[in-house]
Length: 271
Image (cartoon, helix red, strand yellow):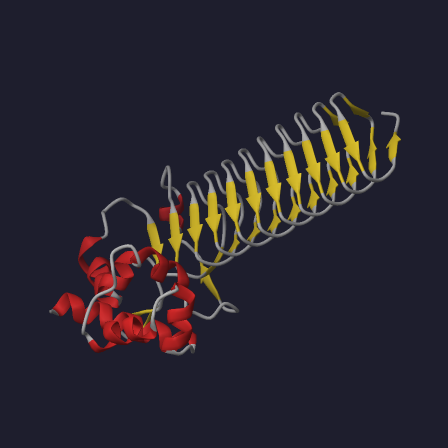
Protein backbone atom coordinates (compact mmCIF):
# COMPACT_ATOMS: atom_id res chain seq x y z
CA UNK A 1 0.00 0.00 0.00
CA UNK A 2 2.91 2.38 0.69
CA UNK A 3 4.20 1.80 -2.85
CA UNK A 4 0.77 2.63 -4.35
CA UNK A 5 0.54 5.73 -2.18
CA UNK A 6 3.94 6.91 -3.44
CA UNK A 7 2.84 6.59 -7.09
CA UNK A 8 -0.45 8.35 -6.36
CA UNK A 9 1.21 11.28 -4.57
CA UNK A 10 3.94 11.64 -7.19
CA UNK A 11 1.49 11.83 -10.11
CA UNK A 12 -0.68 14.36 -8.26
CA UNK A 13 2.36 16.50 -7.43
CA UNK A 14 3.76 16.40 -10.97
CA UNK A 15 0.41 17.22 -12.53
CA UNK A 16 -0.19 20.21 -10.25
CA UNK A 17 3.36 21.51 -10.75
CA UNK A 18 2.79 21.36 -14.51
CA UNK A 19 -0.49 23.23 -14.00
CA UNK A 20 -2.70 20.82 -15.95
CA UNK A 21 -6.01 19.08 -15.26
CA UNK A 22 -6.72 15.37 -15.19
CA UNK A 23 -8.41 15.78 -18.58
CA UNK A 24 -5.25 17.25 -20.14
CA UNK A 25 -3.09 14.44 -18.74
CA UNK A 26 -5.56 11.82 -19.95
CA UNK A 27 -5.60 13.34 -23.43
CA UNK A 28 -1.79 13.44 -23.60
CA UNK A 29 -1.61 9.75 -22.66
CA UNK A 30 -4.58 8.79 -24.86
CA UNK A 31 -6.51 7.25 -21.97
CA UNK A 32 -9.76 8.05 -20.16
CA UNK A 33 -9.96 10.70 -17.47
CA UNK A 34 -11.52 8.04 -15.24
CA UNK A 35 -8.24 6.09 -15.37
CA UNK A 36 -6.26 9.14 -14.23
CA UNK A 37 -8.81 9.76 -11.47
CA UNK A 38 -8.38 6.18 -10.22
CA UNK A 39 -4.59 6.63 -10.08
CA UNK A 40 -4.93 9.79 -8.01
CA UNK A 41 -7.54 8.42 -5.64
CA UNK A 42 -5.57 5.22 -5.09
CA UNK A 43 -8.15 3.03 -6.79
CA UNK A 44 -5.61 1.54 -9.19
CA UNK A 45 -2.04 1.81 -10.47
CA UNK A 46 -1.01 2.78 -14.02
CA UNK A 47 -0.53 -0.12 -16.40
CA UNK A 48 3.14 -1.05 -16.75
CA UNK A 49 3.08 0.00 -20.44
CA UNK A 50 1.92 3.47 -19.40
CA UNK A 51 4.81 4.13 -17.03
CA UNK A 52 7.42 5.16 -19.66
CA UNK A 53 4.88 7.50 -21.29
CA UNK A 54 3.98 9.11 -17.96
CA UNK A 55 7.65 9.54 -17.04
CA UNK A 56 8.45 11.05 -20.45
CA UNK A 57 5.50 13.44 -20.27
CA UNK A 58 6.61 14.84 -16.90
CA UNK A 59 10.34 14.67 -17.67
CA UNK A 60 11.23 12.33 -14.79
CA UNK A 61 12.53 8.78 -14.44
CA UNK A 62 10.30 5.76 -13.85
CA UNK A 63 12.01 5.33 -10.46
CA UNK A 64 10.91 8.85 -9.59
CA UNK A 65 7.29 7.87 -10.30
CA UNK A 66 7.66 4.95 -7.89
CA UNK A 67 9.51 6.68 -5.09
CA UNK A 68 9.49 10.46 -5.65
CA UNK A 69 11.81 12.37 -3.35
CA UNK A 70 11.96 9.43 -0.91
CA UNK A 71 14.40 7.48 -3.05
CA UNK A 72 16.53 10.58 -3.74
CA UNK A 73 16.86 11.39 -0.02
CA UNK A 74 17.84 7.83 0.83
CA UNK A 75 20.36 7.72 -2.00
CA UNK A 76 21.95 10.99 -0.93
CA UNK A 77 22.19 9.85 2.66
CA UNK A 78 23.21 6.21 2.29
CA UNK A 79 23.78 4.88 -1.21
CA UNK A 80 26.27 7.17 -2.95
CA UNK A 81 29.45 5.23 -3.78
CA UNK A 82 32.80 6.23 -2.31
CA UNK A 83 34.31 6.88 -5.75
CA UNK A 84 36.03 10.28 -5.32
CA UNK A 85 33.50 12.08 -7.56
CA UNK A 86 32.68 15.65 -6.50
CA UNK A 87 28.85 15.67 -6.35
CA UNK A 88 27.30 19.10 -5.91
CA UNK A 89 23.61 18.81 -4.99
CA UNK A 90 21.20 21.61 -4.05
CA UNK A 91 18.90 21.36 -1.05
CA UNK A 92 16.15 23.54 0.36
CA UNK A 93 16.14 22.63 4.02
CA UNK A 94 16.32 18.83 4.01
CA UNK A 95 14.62 18.53 0.61
CA UNK A 96 16.69 17.95 -2.48
CA UNK A 97 15.85 20.43 -5.26
CA UNK A 98 15.36 18.55 -8.51
CA UNK A 99 15.65 19.85 -12.08
CA UNK A 100 12.11 21.21 -12.10
CA UNK A 101 12.73 23.54 -9.15
CA UNK A 102 16.25 24.98 -9.10
CA UNK A 103 16.79 28.50 -10.44
CA UNK A 104 18.09 28.34 -14.01
CA UNK A 105 19.52 31.88 -13.72
CA UNK A 106 21.77 31.20 -10.72
CA UNK A 107 25.23 29.61 -10.73
CA UNK A 108 26.97 27.45 -8.15
CA UNK A 109 30.42 29.00 -7.70
CA UNK A 110 33.01 26.35 -6.89
CA UNK A 111 36.51 27.14 -5.73
CA UNK A 112 38.01 23.72 -5.15
CA UNK A 113 40.74 23.44 -2.47
CA UNK A 114 44.22 23.12 -3.95
CA UNK A 115 44.83 19.70 -2.36
CA UNK A 116 41.76 18.27 -4.12
CA UNK A 117 42.76 19.73 -7.47
CA UNK A 118 46.00 17.73 -7.20
CA UNK A 119 44.04 14.48 -7.43
CA UNK A 120 45.06 12.50 -10.58
CA UNK A 121 41.43 12.46 -11.77
CA UNK A 122 38.71 14.55 -10.15
CA UNK A 123 35.25 14.22 -11.71
CA UNK A 124 32.29 16.55 -11.14
CA UNK A 125 28.56 15.80 -11.11
CA UNK A 126 26.57 18.96 -10.48
CA UNK A 127 22.83 19.54 -10.02
CA UNK A 128 22.60 23.05 -11.46
CA UNK A 129 24.71 25.61 -13.31
CA UNK A 130 28.41 25.23 -12.52
CA UNK A 131 30.99 28.01 -12.34
CA UNK A 132 34.24 26.18 -11.50
CA UNK A 133 37.30 28.23 -10.60
CA UNK A 134 40.15 26.42 -12.34
CA UNK A 135 40.59 23.36 -14.54
CA UNK A 136 39.11 19.89 -14.12
CA UNK A 137 41.25 16.77 -14.41
CA UNK A 138 38.28 14.46 -15.09
CA UNK A 139 34.80 14.80 -16.59
CA UNK A 140 31.94 17.20 -15.82
CA UNK A 141 28.25 16.28 -15.82
CA UNK A 142 25.82 19.10 -15.11
CA UNK A 143 22.06 19.67 -15.18
CA UNK A 144 22.77 23.24 -16.25
CA UNK A 145 25.57 25.28 -17.85
CA UNK A 146 29.28 24.57 -17.30
CA UNK A 147 31.86 27.37 -16.97
CA UNK A 148 35.48 26.57 -16.05
CA UNK A 149 39.06 26.27 -17.32
CA UNK A 150 40.30 23.23 -19.18
CA UNK A 151 38.48 19.89 -18.84
CA UNK A 152 40.58 16.78 -19.43
CA UNK A 153 37.57 14.45 -19.69
CA UNK A 154 34.18 14.75 -21.35
CA UNK A 155 31.32 17.19 -20.75
CA UNK A 156 27.63 16.30 -20.59
CA UNK A 157 25.20 19.05 -19.65
CA UNK A 158 21.65 20.30 -20.10
CA UNK A 159 22.83 23.87 -20.66
CA UNK A 160 25.77 25.45 -22.45
CA UNK A 161 29.54 25.07 -22.18
CA UNK A 162 31.98 27.94 -21.65
CA UNK A 163 35.49 26.74 -20.90
CA UNK A 164 39.01 26.13 -22.17
CA UNK A 165 40.16 23.01 -23.96
CA UNK A 166 38.15 19.78 -23.57
CA UNK A 167 40.02 16.49 -23.85
CA UNK A 168 36.98 14.26 -24.45
CA UNK A 169 33.62 14.63 -26.14
CA UNK A 170 30.90 17.23 -25.56
CA UNK A 171 27.14 16.60 -25.40
CA UNK A 172 25.05 19.63 -24.46
CA UNK A 173 21.66 21.17 -25.11
CA UNK A 174 22.96 24.74 -25.22
CA UNK A 175 25.74 26.64 -26.96
CA UNK A 176 29.44 25.78 -26.85
CA UNK A 177 32.23 28.33 -26.45
CA UNK A 178 35.57 26.68 -25.78
CA UNK A 179 39.03 25.82 -27.08
CA UNK A 180 39.94 22.56 -28.76
CA UNK A 181 37.71 19.49 -28.33
CA UNK A 182 39.43 16.11 -28.39
CA UNK A 183 36.36 14.01 -29.22
CA UNK A 184 33.02 14.55 -30.93
CA UNK A 185 30.66 17.47 -30.38
CA UNK A 186 26.85 17.34 -30.21
CA UNK A 187 25.20 20.66 -29.45
CA UNK A 188 21.65 22.00 -29.36
CA UNK A 189 22.91 25.57 -29.71
CA UNK A 190 25.63 27.40 -31.59
CA UNK A 191 29.31 26.39 -31.57
CA UNK A 192 32.41 28.58 -31.28
CA UNK A 193 35.50 26.48 -30.61
CA UNK A 194 38.93 25.41 -31.81
CA UNK A 195 39.73 22.14 -33.55
CA UNK A 196 37.37 19.17 -33.11
CA UNK A 197 38.88 15.68 -32.92
CA UNK A 198 35.85 13.89 -34.37
CA UNK A 199 32.46 14.83 -35.85
CA UNK A 200 30.24 17.85 -35.13
CA UNK A 201 26.44 17.77 -34.99
CA UNK A 202 24.89 21.13 -34.22
CA UNK A 203 21.38 22.57 -34.48
CA UNK A 204 22.72 26.10 -35.05
CA UNK A 205 25.76 27.84 -36.52
CA UNK A 206 29.27 26.37 -36.27
CA UNK A 207 32.46 28.41 -36.06
CA UNK A 208 35.53 26.30 -35.36
CA UNK A 209 38.94 25.12 -36.52
CA UNK A 210 39.55 21.83 -38.30
CA UNK A 211 36.96 19.03 -38.01
CA UNK A 212 38.47 15.53 -38.05
CA UNK A 213 35.30 13.82 -39.26
CA UNK A 214 31.95 14.94 -40.70
CA UNK A 215 29.89 18.03 -39.88
CA UNK A 216 26.10 18.48 -39.72
CA UNK A 217 24.64 21.90 -39.02
CA UNK A 218 21.16 23.41 -38.80
CA UNK A 219 22.75 26.78 -39.60
CA UNK A 220 25.91 28.02 -41.26
CA UNK A 221 29.43 26.61 -40.94
CA UNK A 222 32.71 28.53 -40.83
CA UNK A 223 35.74 26.33 -40.18
CA UNK A 224 39.07 24.98 -41.39
CA UNK A 225 39.47 21.61 -43.07
CA UNK A 226 36.70 19.00 -42.85
CA UNK A 227 37.99 15.43 -43.10
CA UNK A 228 34.69 13.92 -44.19
CA UNK A 229 31.26 14.94 -45.53
CA UNK A 230 29.21 18.06 -44.73
CA UNK A 231 25.48 18.69 -44.40
CA UNK A 232 24.63 22.34 -43.91
CA UNK A 233 21.31 24.24 -43.91
CA UNK A 234 23.04 27.62 -44.17
CA UNK A 235 26.19 28.92 -45.84
CA UNK A 236 29.44 26.96 -45.78
CA UNK A 237 32.82 28.70 -45.56
CA UNK A 238 35.85 26.52 -44.96
CA UNK A 239 39.21 25.34 -46.31
CA UNK A 240 39.37 21.84 -47.81
CA UNK A 241 36.51 19.31 -47.72
CA UNK A 242 37.60 15.69 -48.12
CA UNK A 243 34.08 14.28 -48.59
CA UNK A 244 30.79 15.21 -50.19
CA UNK A 245 28.69 18.29 -49.49
CA UNK A 246 24.95 18.97 -49.17
CA UNK A 247 24.41 22.68 -48.66
CA UNK A 248 21.29 24.85 -48.80
CA UNK A 249 23.28 28.08 -48.88
CA UNK A 250 26.44 29.33 -50.59
CA UNK A 251 29.76 27.50 -50.48
CA UNK A 252 33.15 29.18 -50.26
CA UNK A 253 36.13 26.85 -49.92
CA UNK A 254 39.49 25.82 -51.35
CA UNK A 255 38.58 22.33 -52.58
CA UNK A 256 35.90 19.63 -52.43
CA UNK A 257 36.91 16.03 -53.09
CA UNK A 258 33.44 14.47 -53.04
CA UNK A 259 30.10 15.08 -54.71
CA UNK A 260 28.37 18.42 -54.22
CA UNK A 261 24.68 19.31 -53.90
CA UNK A 262 24.33 23.04 -53.42
CA UNK A 263 21.27 25.29 -53.65
CA UNK A 264 23.42 28.43 -53.63
CA UNK A 265 26.59 29.51 -55.41
CA UNK A 266 30.01 27.86 -55.14
CA UNK A 267 33.25 29.87 -54.95
CA UNK A 268 36.67 28.20 -54.89
CA UNK A 269 39.41 30.22 -53.21
CA UNK A 270 43.16 29.85 -53.38
CA UNK A 271 45.12 28.53 -50.40
